[in-house]
Length: 446
Ligand code: GLY
Ligand code: MN
Ligand code: MN
Figure 1: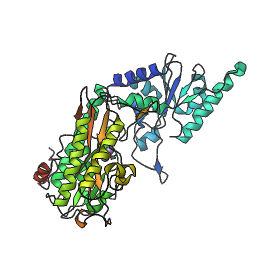
Figure 2: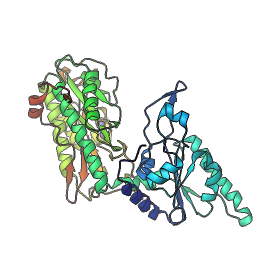
Figure 3: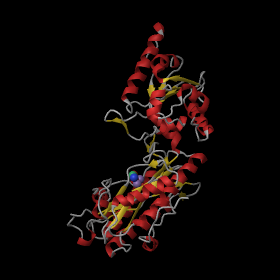
Figure 4: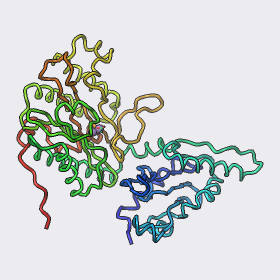
């Protein structure tokens, strides 16, 4: 018999806190749909972040219905136990198991969802549900709501209003609790250790895929269940492709290697990028670009504190990186004109960062009531300036072409500044040059 290994009180507290935001209404959150390929081959399954956030339950074909102030308040629908299916696909808790082990008041088999949902919605005055993630579930929820209206007879009551549950849950997830921060920090630390191992492993002739293997090995050996997003292991001019993930080339002497990879731990993910020379020594041009990007990154991290508006960080990134492009001679003209005409985006096409948490691009609004929102303690996000010079860009000197540098750390806003949760992975040039290629061997077990 499997048992949940997480602290279920954390999840019950979240349900209660979210419930307090929506008195009188109901919240419906569905599990992530299962992907099946070639009829019976399963992809690795990962639960929907919002569903996991509220339940700790990892099986597909499940739905949570939360009705604050009503009895029962927490209702779930899950797959029935099924001896044959469990022989093929593994253990299922079944409705009784979920009631007993997960602290959910009432649990029904998922095949009764269409029959029972209309009654559950009869006493509520609105439904928080995210339309558009799971079309089959959308149909069932809408049909249930229509059945609820029909049940009311001639009361004149119309269809219940639907509000977007992602906004509600995104706001709840944005400010991390101590328990969440423990997992977030662990995800960051595992990611950092894996990057360090990858640096030690790298030397001319190793392949991008082998570097990915070192990252994956370290993630899994240190307790991560999976990567938080596709590995980017990009050597040479592949580093100028922002979401490169072929990862199938040899790492060549003289090239830079850009690694963007993060481990997921208890559903929280790290998101680290480091860029360093394959042979352990920066060329003059690589060093100039690298030092420039690193200085920008440090200045932005130093600027983070409560009250700063996230958009200021974006603007600061664009401004400082444009200074660098002008200084290196990649662009010419007045800085304001360059930025006004978006010319800097030729070499820096992305933003300075994003919220970080259960999803790498985490939930949570960046604007509130039409205004950019100020940072608050315990928000977590990435700071990731970069500069990417296309290999065929004849407007820059030859030795700069094909250089791509990004440096990405993960920070938490504190009461008067920020904590860098990924600081254990080196980024100073001198530190990198000491470590690269010094050799990494898998841990000996036993
Ligand atoms: N790894 C995805 C990102 O940095 O946004
Ligand atoms: Mn990244
Ligand atoms: Mn990122």
